[in-house]
Image (cartoon, rainbow, N blue to C red):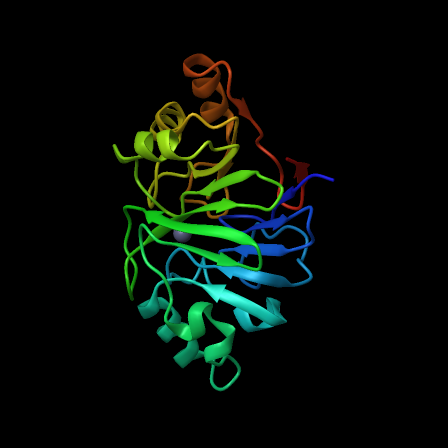
Amino acid sequence: MADKLCWLGHAFFEIETSAGQNILIDPFWEDNPAAGSRPDHGDIILITHDHFDHCDNLAEFLAADGIIVGQPEVLNKIRAGSGESLQEENFVLAGSGMNIGGTVNVKDVDITMVQAFHSSDAGSPAGYIIQTPEGKTFYHAGDTGIFGGMDVLGDIYDIDIAMLPIGSVFTMDPKQAAHAVKLLQPETAVPMHYGTFEVLVQSADEFCRLVARKMQDVEVMAIEPGETIEC
Ligand SMILES: [Zn+2]
């Protein structure tokens, strides 16, 4: 059995681990013009920041004993906005949250929060390193511009799959994202946060071309929303 990664459109991904945990990252379903197939549920839901296109429909997707992971300020805002539907026990460490540099083990998955350069109404933006029981390491960059510390992340973590925004305007464009691949040195790069809205870069073609030129040994998998790859 292998871990599976499904792109659900925009920055929304589902990792189904070989041990059976369903991890959702940055849910954006109802108003997502690029939504893929509908995920069943999340045992763990990771939130990179609190913009509408990254934390939508949380209560709807959360499993009965599911845990939402994010920064304390972001979790407080989500809880306050949920009416009574989300309680302390629905959040990591009973709502205490976590922060950049820290690792928590949730349902046998090691989750490390790392920096991202963007904005967030509450807290600050983040990315995640996710290490599954299978031994695979995923990196979800969140919304971010390129930053020099990506090479440090690449040195510390042996990244198998990096999910990187390439859509420009709000995040890295294909040129920055291709250089990010060089810094991170993952086995596989999966582009995201493009094509969803008219203002964003509409295809992954340039990103694929640039990575092929700079980093021949990295495989780019520009999958379609709803498509799953085995990792
Ligand atoms: Zn975004």
